[in-house]
Length: 480
Image 1: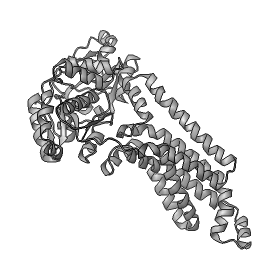
Image 2: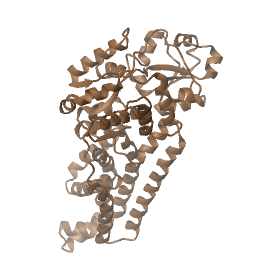
Image 3: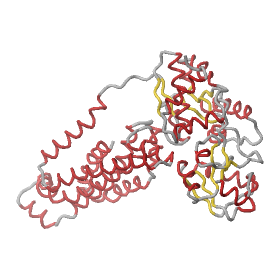
Image 4: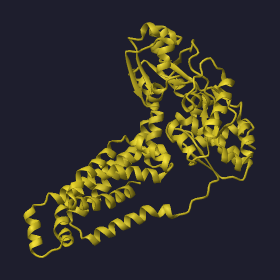
């Protein structure tokens, strides 16, 4: 991904930079557009790519190329434009045409500045490429995201150190090319050889997959996605591919709408609140599911199959030390101490109006003096280290057991039910109608305790999610 993105950026930005030196009135507007593109947050740009291109390596390469354009474009223009006019006049006086002057005088003199831009872009690309894991592009970002999700420094280092080595390797090759003043032919041969090495695996035809099951970041969606894979392959001749770790709800849902994935496990409460924009206050589990099923079919032409038994709803959790210090057992008990406690909430929880922080304020009157936005994988570590006192949690999360946390009773019944159920495209079910009965064999299965135990095996025992899913299905006679 890094090499192809850098190569694409060079092929676009260098010729464009040269052209701008010949039409200088366009230089500032064009470079300004490149600057604006680079100000777009990387994760937002990656998510935006899903709508038009889908998930995988291709949208990641396009996004990384966009990020790499500005330094190369600006340095190419500056390097050529900044050459002493007297030198250009001398070259012209010797009878050189504009093209020959460019090739023999301007480009050789501008090479150090252009290469500085290329090296800067290379660092930007490799640093941003790790985020591409959130849209199914894979790579070292998978390890880093797993480490953040599990608060495991080993995984983070396992992804970060090779990324740093890759950056040093690229820098060495670029410096070698620049300092040794290699000929254009030598540089072309080196780049072509590297291109063939990188692109060779892509040329090997991959096995055709009939069904693609997606999943959000974290262990639980990946476990459920693998359950779908096993029961489908057990009962049909279909080949199923699992694309887990795709980030948050917006990314996975967009991937489903554009057809890059066919099915993914979605929670009833998330679908009702986030995807339909409805308020589930006062509704029980069955009412939320039925309303979601009907609404999702009408608005998005999607099919929502029957949910499992467990309810992975939102909750507020505190450490045992906080519970003992303040004697809190319910969410209402926090009210007298809200100015003394520090809260650490995920960005999704802070953004949800109907069952997130805004609803917490409206229902319980809680407005903590200090509220920190945290990545989901870091909140358990933050509360364990005493950085925060209260976090939002999911009732089946493994760290509740690992860190001996206390879940506060939702005494005002704020949080709606969150049962996992398969969400799929209508055309997939039309092509394979047998999938409805197969996936509905999981309906009513898995208790809260079962899900918490499976999450624990993945997050803290480092067990393969596919193995965990398969073992559960075997033990409960859902696989032969």
